[in-house]
Image (cartoon, rainbow, N blue to C red; front, side):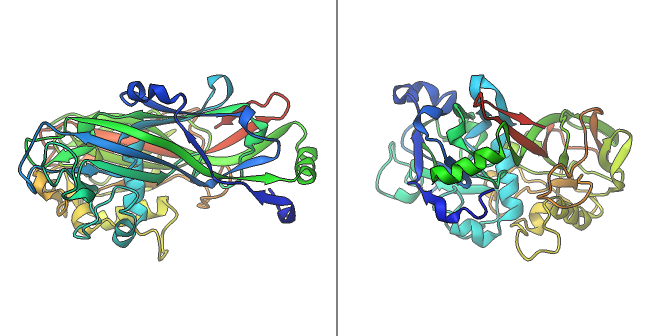
Amino acid sequence: MLMGLKGLITLCDSLRYSLVPPERVQHLFKKCWVYWYTGTSSRRGQYLDPTTTYIRYKITYGVPGAGVAGTDFSRLLGSAYSPFIKQEVYGNNSVVLESINEVGVLASMLLNCQLNASDKLGLSSTMGFDMQGIATGATAGHRMWMSATAAAGQPQALESLTFEYSIPLIGILGSGTDKFIPIGALYGLRFELTLDTLSRYTIAMTANTLTSVSISEFEFVGNVIELSPEAQMLIEQANPEKIHIRSSTYRQASNILAASSGPGTNDLLVGIRVSSLKSVYMVCSPANANEGKYAGVNPCLDQGTCLVIAGQNYPQRTLNPSAHPADSFQELQKSFGALNLSVFNGCITKIGYYTSSLPYQLCLAYSQTPGNVMTVPSQFYLGIDTEVVARKQNLLSGINVNSSPMFFRAQIGSVGLSNAVHTCNFFGHYDVILELDVASKNIVAKF
């Protein structure tokens, strides 16, 4: 986009935008965080670099009173994204550009599949992972309230009640976009994160649980470059009416498998409709699993498991995750474009991936004991590549699922399921084209 213009580019200071207005923080932390970027504060020729964007915030947990030090502690589940249940980006006039439900579950799966244990240990200072290095591949993160005093204090300060997190963004304002976003050509963008219920992203080791949470010092951070007027004029001449930016993001849908479901075929509707679907991921979580909705458990799937789109199976040969979990893991890697790579192999161990609803074939039952959350994780994820040509960075390389409903065929094996409701979260990775109207300064997402 900016080839040949390097001598005409200057790097502005990192932009930082906090909540607006700040007096609404105490009200909003229970519902959502709102970030506004208004075009009046940007200048012609300014571009946001989405490869540098992240959010940072402080979080403070409340406790019921004094407890037993080293015993009455809790752990964060997932990552620093986990306190949020929904991420949204709006353009002018509240036009939705992106909406990702269960964004914490999505982030946890992506991080487990693409960061190894050493990566997670090295990022424990910023992303909420465990700093002890004992089981950094687990889905559960750092400890909280190790001192078990009635308030935050100096003892065990690194594992007390107040923490600071920062995490790179998923989606069109982050990892999904590799082109600069011309913020100087927009009237405004709004970035929203909705806060989840505390008990859904923490796990207590005893009945003495955390009672409340508050968030402060929330900031959206990223680098902005500014072109000289001459360079900006060349770009405007090449794009007099519309500017198109290639991006990709995720969309979520969910369905359930009833408690104690028997063997047989269950076709679950996956409510995702897009023009270019690149891959689909499934995270199945029994209600009584240690990690809650962050658990990844194989619902005793047998041969015949697949996606069904317009009457066609994906993959055509179908999968048998219980009898051939290694094969399913390779399909998961292929869906990330990481097959046969020396990086992005993840931190999921065999004991984490070979986890099922009940003992079946090569898989073992998931753990319901909080004390085992670090040593017996539940990390079974199913990934299916749906690209026509497996090139993850190509535009519109996925299949069109706008005109036909998509189903997940869960072929449950002979043992059935455990006596807990299994929630299946599906995440579709799809192509997006951001279209900017030069005259009106409006932006829309086409997918």
